[in-house]
Amino acid sequence: MKFLNYLVPFVFVVLFLSSCSSDTDDRNVEENASAFVQANNKVVFFGSIDLKSILNKAEYKAVPKFGGIIQGELKNIESGLNLDAKVYYAIEGPMDPNNLGTVYLFAEVKNADSLKLQLTQRGYDLESDDDIDYFQSGDVAVGIKGKLALMMVKKGGFEVKTAIADAMELTTGKTLTGTAAKLIAEKSDISLNLHLYNNYISNEALLPKLAKDKKAQMEEMMKESFSQANIYFEEGQLRMAMKNHFSASLLKRTMLQTDEQAMIRENIGSGEPKIAMSMNLDMVKLQTWMDDYAPGVLDKLIENAGPMQMAMMMAGGKLSNLMSGKLGFAMYGNPTAGSMVPDFAFYMGFGPQGKPMAEMAQNFLSGGTMKLDIDERGVSGISSDAYKSVPGSAIKVPVGCETFGKTAFSGFANLENMDMAGFELKGGAKLVELVKYVNFTFDVNGGEILVKLKDPKTNVLKQSAQFMIKEFESQIGAMNP
Image 1 (spheres, rainbow, N blue to C red):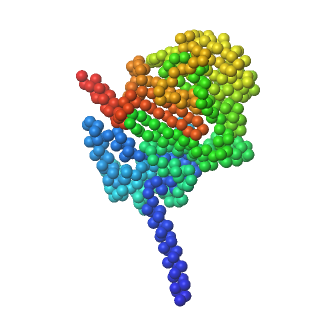
Image 2: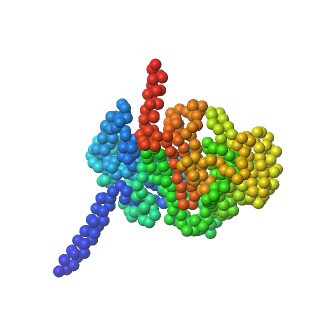
């Protein structure tokens, strides 16, 4: 009986541990990536890429000459990886323009033997340790364990075995919960999610400058706060849908404003602009945010700004004393290479001390062909009387761009009748010839960037692929007349 008293608990513990182990081993790739993000507070961006969907929408099989090559290569890859499952990614901070943080990619293994064979045939020598097969090539390392293939891209030297093993370990813990779990499960062609709390704590330059109470406030605002962007390749358009998931305390501090009347349209000229942009911010809230959580940043930005530095000194160092936060710009006519703004109009609303500053600078600003009009509310300028604002009327906004001027940030580019030949564009930049218009809008809730093509019935990826193939063929033809 004593033997049974020890045996039963022992068997129970073994079964329990076995069940936990199998749950981890049987995880799908989304769960692996989710656990990695949950365990790694250095992750600033995370999301997924639906490679299979993207390739199918491009109709790659029908691409002349290259379709068969792509199909054959894809078949080889799919012998080892399950591309019906999405590829997930995570990017660590801190990030700066010259150095993207460490990038991790997660893919689901369909057949480990086939995958390893594909890698060795491409010249990679795999090593094995603790059930992980791995190799390194420069800044890239790859590890394979069970159903998970993990790629790591990191600048500088690192010990590959330890780095891969540590990353693999992070995929075995608890998965994301709440808003973050919904974001990583989002269905789109490309998903991009910004983890605001992790982004904040990775900002090594900012943190030492903040007082203890300000750090606590910032942490409270950023916890469980995310900014989401999902990209969809659709018939006749590319669409980026953005949504903010902000904490209640962060929402209270937001400086993003809206204006359903879109009054800025009445102040930036007349007629039909080719390009227009607007901004609507609460400058007092913005100034308070910078004073509280970004001390010294504004001073550094304007220390070499010439007249702006003098204006800031006279305004007591407060940007909110100069500007109201309402700003608009419109460009008219057809731009050409070497002439970015042939004709334009602009408007900037004043803060309490904005008008005196503008009057002092009026002679300087009017030195060229620009004509200024200053009143108590703000300053407007035009490059030609032909586009002067008419009282009681507003600019004409293209169909599909009705959000212009109504949100915190908005803008459009009407390219349908614009002559692009003068720009002498090359390579991928020539894809702009397919575009009818671009519209963007953003406020505290989120927004959208929409690239509308002239052909509304064909998927944007298929159109782009066909266009680039024709460009390639024309270039080859020019080289071999």
